[in-house]
Length: 566
View 1: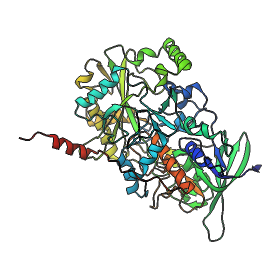
View 2 (view 1 turned 45 degrees about the vertical axis):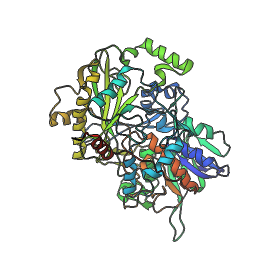
View 3 (view 1 turned 90 degrees about the vertical axis):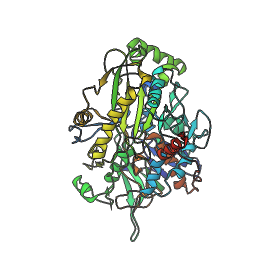
View 4 (view 1 turned 180 degrees about the vertical axis):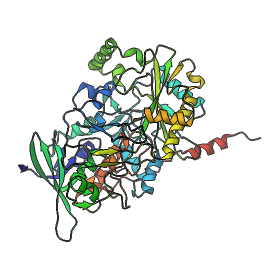
């Protein structure tokens, strides 16, 4: 028995994640708008979510994250890959690594070139600035008045952080003081979304202040089954509400203006397909009656892969000496008392962005440096002290899909990334191995660098590297692009985030990225939601930025200009 809720809303937002919390705040800022936010998960008030150093716990806990798995990946030795997605207020911003990377300016120019009108860097930069409160002051690239706190964590107190940056410079790469500013390329401090020692998720930054408003309703533990449509002769079908389940009850709620899906790159295409929106063949196999043909739903799926380069450390200064039970108790107690110390950082405090080969205009490789050798689940990789650098090829050409397999909303969709199905991606990871070895073996790390544990010095040839990568790479947990924005036949939404061919239905989350940026996805997802909020409300978009960007070509020209004349 399905009950119809008496209350109706102007906007219904599905998913209280990185995008949904932003929308809930911005749409409800106008007191005349009644807004409903539906979230399948529950409260984020857990020490394991709020304490930055505990980041591995919520990601691997079913209470806080969908524990999705891919189908067997044919180019990764048929491994099934872990694909956790946030299932809690704040969504994946409550379970992620809190790393703040916007991506390179050319990533967004690429969006416009693929058909996402006015989503180039000049139009996106003002919304990055609007969203953030950067600890080190405003300039042409950084904002200081936004809800999202961004800083440098504990400011690289461990000497290994700076040694990694110096090694990159020793190897001939650039140094960058702000990779989210004019120049992404190079080595420097990593930025993170932490405020006063606490994870600054979109729940903390955007949703909690908005929940004080009487015109915003938040319902948790609500599993959305489908979008409801109405049709009139001669008109496109119109989204008029959603059907959801809560505590065993089936409920329908109506929207006067729009339904916005912000359920993420797995959830949003799945809900569209459950609603009968997608490719006829996919829906028929799942026993779902088609409402609207849209073949791109669930296609174009992209993700970042990475692996760990691990070394023993010659000095007893790594975090491996801090993960015994007594030290964990001390770290946790200090954090509880005053939100400081090793509990107040994600430990990824230095980083690098480089190009995998000559001729590329912008970086396609990303480094996260960790002064410890351990796995994502927080367990030691080996006995003794060590350090590691996470390295990935960030502009993959491999494409996958999300496909509904049942009309039952409780049944997870089929997820297939087809990782490393494109030769360019394979060659990108060969570059990851060879270039990283070159960097780590620079003089700046001589006093710290011990034995190479992984991949191991025996891994040298293309064939050996390919085998290692197939067996060892892991997802960087950046699924995206499965409901891409554009105007071509496989685009799902237009440049206003409206679903093609339907009325009053939008998708606003990382699923509508046309291509994946060179970096972590939380920051661009928040930016996208900020800009989409203005589009939904019919506001004039912020004026495009005129800030310059330093590309590889610019830097090379600068170096030529500096060269001494004979």
